[in-house]
Structure formats: structure tokens, C-alpha cells
Length: 373
Image (cartoon, rainbow, N blue to C red):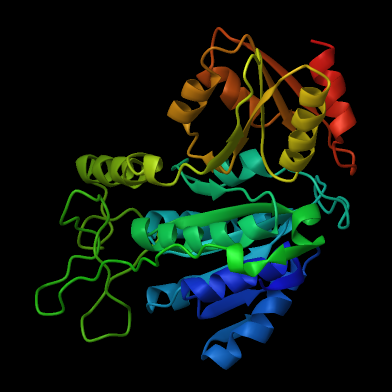
């Protein structure tokens, strides 16, 4: 048993290192700065590079350049930084550049409250790119999740050649807890598929059913074209509607078709329950306490904790909600993901409780919501 006292941001750094990350660029911002501090400590001894840039825009630009050269890369920020990342997020999507982006959310809008957590960026992460292309967003509930989901995030970024977000928040990122690291699982690592250097290289030509083109690094033996503009398989700018439609559909389809492989969740199923509680993030811990308390009181409730938010795991939600009279969704915002639950479970009763005032949602509050239904 290896017990240690650790915060979520430090676990993210350890997960990145285990996944093969060798380049980090960032700009200090509460509550994500200790991710940066962890990478400063971890990367140089492992032959990696940790870079403080002049701002968030430069940070993501440096990461994309390093990724195009073949490195596994990560950056970390909070909501205000995600605003500045937006153009480079779109670049990473359109040009299929792997990058892991950590969003340690804090209370917004704008500068908001740097020392108060929230889950206010959930819709922003999904729709913060200029093309509306699907993205992958994973959500941890505790320190262990921060480690394991970060490794998964790197695997997914490499496999699908896309940005992958970890939507943490201040309470997860900067709260220390005792953990047994021997119980942590490190998923098998994945690397981006490489193209042959002996044949003419078309940087965006798909060669198999994955929907993902093989990769060659910029600066190698083979000329690699890269552009943020609409392009064809050869990397040259195009205005051909058929070519544009083909690549736009492929960018979304490659992720949607793989959703079943990265639909992460936890559940507690209670016999005799007619209510299913759905939540994510740090609120899942209060929800678990609620389920325990209600069971002791003779009122069983089932729990579904989502750890993949985007793309929406529609099949999972539909299957887990089957047979329940009432669905209760609890979020640390004013209602960002509940609209997806209602869309998927059209016709079912879906009740919502949300709060975004800087306070955590307590088990007692969730119990009250369930009992009042």
C-alpha cells in the first residue's frame, strides 16, 4: 500500500507523465496553476519541456507546434483561459492536432471568483470551437479519476488526433485527500498511427476504417503540409464543396463512431428504486452520500455518475434510465447538461437542481430535492 496526501492537480501531472507527455506550456491561473507546478517538477527530469508563456494564446500555440513535431502535449487553465484558447482549439480540431487541455473550472462569468469552484464551462467546452465539430470531454470526481482519466485523455487525443478536455474544478483540483496509489490503474498507452516515409504523403488522407489519417511529424524527412484553413487530403487549401463536406463530416464521425470505447461512468443501482440521480464532477461525491443516507432511511435511490460528457453518451443514458419513474439531475451550474438529459430522455420526467454561487451542493440539499418529488 502506497498512501499519500495529494490534490487532483498533482494527480493530473502524474497521469500526464505516465501517458508519455513530454511537453507542457501554460500561463499561471488559479485554480490550475498547481498543474503547471507539477509539470515543472516532473517533466525536466524525464527529458521533457515545461514552458511558461506570456499568455494563454501563446501556450496553446506552443503546444500545437510541439504536437505537430510528434510530442504528446498538455496545457492547463481555467474558464478565462479557455476563452483565449478558442482559436487554437478550432485549429487543433480542423488540422487534427492531438492536445490534452485541462480546465480546472472556477466560478464565472469572466474573472469571476478565482477561489470558488463551479461547473460553468460545460457547454463552453463543447461549443467553444468555430465549426461546431464534436469534441471529447472527460470529467473526474476525485484524485484517482484525475490520474486515470488524464491517461485516457492522452490515449484518445493520440487515437483520434483531436483535442481532449478534462473538465475538473477548483474543489477537485486543489483539495488534498489520502489516496492509495497502488490501487490506481494505468490504461495501456496508445500512440498516433504513423504513415510510411517511403511513399508520397497526403497528410489528411484516411487509409482505414478508423477515419483518422496517419501522422508524420513536421521537421522530419518527409514534407508535411499544415494549415488552419479548409483543406483537402493533400493539405492544400480548397473551396470544393464536396471536399469540404467530406472532411467536416469525417472530423465528427471519427469521434462519434468511437464513443462506445470511451464512455466512462460509475453507477449504484438500488433494488426497488423509482428514482435515478444523475450527476458528474465533485457533486458526485455528495450524491453518493445522499444515496447512502436515503438507503438507510428506507428510500432507495439509484445513481449514475457520468465521466464522459461529450459526445453525449446517449445509449448509456437511455439504458440506465429505463424503468425509472423519475430522473433527478444535479449540477454545479444553472442547468447546462440537464438539457442533454431531457433531449435524450424525451417523455420521461426529468427534474433539475442547480446552483452556482461558490458553495458546494451538499448531500442534505440533494436529499431535499429528492424527497420533495
